[in-house]
Amino acid sequence: MPLGKRSDCGDARFAGVEIPFAHDVADAMQAELLCGFDFVVAPLVDSAHQQPALELPPGETAAPRTRRELMLSSAQWGGQIVGKTSEWIHPDSSDADLAARSARALAQEIEWASFLGLQAVVVQPPPRLGAAVNFARLVNRALEGLSHMALWVKLPLAAAAAAPAAARRQKQERRQRADVEAGASGSGGSTQQQGQQQQEHQQQQQEQGEADQAEREGVDEPRDPWDDWQQLFALCERSNLLGAALEVPADLPPAPLVRRWLGQPLKALLLPTSVFGTNKRGYPVLSRAHQELVHLAFAHGVQVILTGDSKHRVAPAPTAPPPPPPSSAPKQPAGGAEGAGGGEPGDFPIVNPGESHALRPYWEYLCYV
Image 1: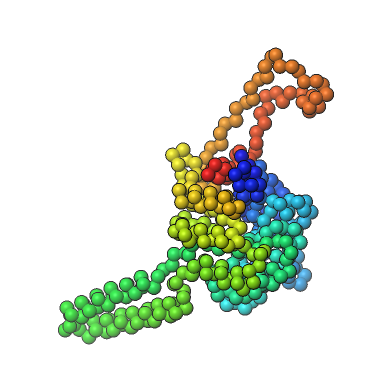
Image 2: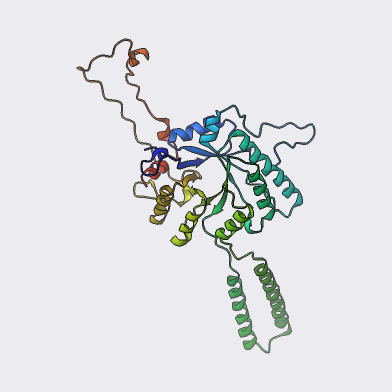
């Protein structure tokens, strides 16, 4: 059952797949479409070229870093491809040169995607989106110049697990208790032991200072992606062309924290192959919580994008040869469809090349989730 034509969820495109950069995007896309996916998410520029696409040193020539726009028709660019910006882009970097190059590259890639006629582009945010004011300014400026293309900001569904400062404090408290016990038992120790204890005490004070500074800077406190999204959405004047693409983790947050995203312009769920488990037959399966999440996405018109390489090696089902035609069947006229093609197909079975695709088991699972 093609996911793009589900009878229970309308006719929107639901299932896509992320592919690496390929100069021949037509062949790369064809393999995924034969597998059953409705669209692909492809990088706009080769990730190896960490420079604005139009800036090269004088006299230097480079291989094409973008694709020729004539490889595909405008309908294919607009209906079967979602772009993705380069992951190295970091407009809020402390490195001034990297920040400047990133700003120019981000603007150029969005303009290139708009020229191709894409419907949407997945934008990779900086590591600390809550403090990425320059990134928000660039996205807002790009949205002002767009008329139809949407920008989907990639966000984690849940805050990443951090190394909390409390763990460091517990470690320091254990050291302090050990020092107190050692001092009580060896109060008459030598001068060498006292010097060693004093050195350890200074080291503990230094670690405590670093921990306090990290807490003040918010390094160890994981920010809620919801807060980052609300801040970016407000700075971009709540544009109707700005959406969220949430990356699904292996451990889902509580259901209320998931359902709150339904009130936002949620456009896609990025579903890594690493979150799939394995059943007794070796096929990929999702946990009950992940199944409910995917079903919720389908029910609300949110597209699911499969990311990552296949983690399950499932042998394709053997293809049985077609049964021989009955002897009493009437023969086709010479001018019929089969006669025009050169006669009966004979012993050559018609095989769908997409059935042997490495991601085919994942697609089949999503069809019936």
